[in-house]
Amino acid sequence: MGYLLPTEYVQYGLTAETTDDWVTMASALIEAYCRRPSLLGTQYVERMRLTAGAQTVRLSYRPLAAAVGAASALVGIRVRFGKKRRGELPDPFREEIARAFSVSGSWSSLDVTTVDVNETTAELTFPTNFLGLDYNEVEVTYTSGLETIPDAVKVACVQIVKNAQATPAMNVKSSKMDTMQMQYFSGSLIDPQVQLLLKPYVAERLG
Image (tube, rainbow, N blue to C red; front, side, top):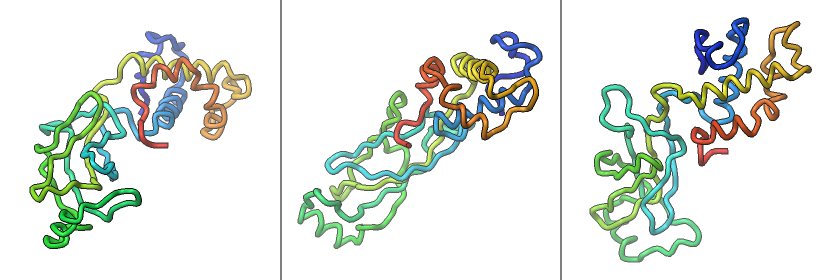
């Protein structure tokens, strides 16, 4: 799916003769640059380790957005008390508790309503376990994405198309553009101006 409708081509600065495949490929380059399958609402699953002594994580994809009919962007959360990592100082008393209740290494579901969510930063803060144990690994299923495509993304899409059409080696008048060709020139097509427009939508923790 392209991030610019055919009826918007002229409005955003493209010629009426621009074919849909240019916008489709520009949109694909935007998704690759942002390291996400789509800028629109999509469900993700992330498994993360928690820093010793902290019970917070930051999700990779923003903005968080609840699916239609859902009360929260969080779909499901699983937590566990795994093995201590090198450099972590285990609490002998808590380790005994963990062994007594056989919780080490086991996954359990957590009520998403007990997790504090910072919608702006996509940071989650987890509650303390009733045994006084800290989680050290979490798996979060959530939804993130845009409900509508903002002007910044549309302008970025147009700029990529214009950059491609201004690249002689792409031979836009005599042949249909090729995927490998676009990828080869992606460094020049996604110029600093485009990067600035897309900055809010780039996945933070990946890559």
